[in-house]
Length: 183
Image (cartoon, rainbow, N blue to C red; front, side, top):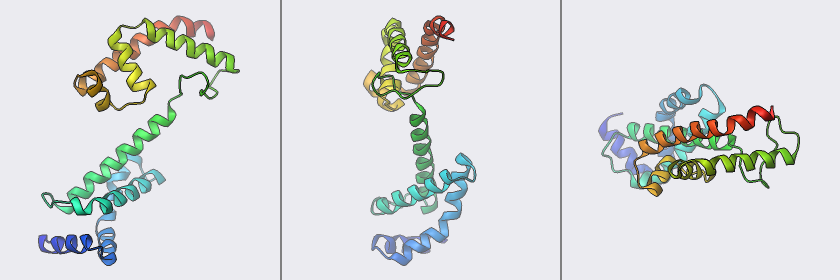
């Protein structure tokens, strides 16, 4: 698509021309789907991410400044939609540590054993140095992103990642004796 054709398409999109939205979809859906498949393979998750990306692009069309090509902008939106989908998927796999909200964990046959596990994990977290306690609390218990945690702690994102890794390793070391006895 030439720069002139792209500029004309953008004008039509901003005016709400439904034919322009159809053209945008026909022109760019293949490349957006290919980008999503690099994250998810040929799955429903890839199709969902592309759909989310188009919705986001349609909503943000008025804000598109044209500093980059439309295809580049759409690619970035698609990648962001894929990353959001992956984060949602990761968070949905987390088992909450609150006693009343925990669902049955593998190997646990009763609510009592879940409560014991939650208590041991909280005690283990309490044994960690403050910097480790804070990063685990923000990331794992409150579900904040790395960037949000970095802002709260006043450090860089890389420091959060490193600290979280070390904190989880330290927590694993603290909990291993209890877990070995439970099995």
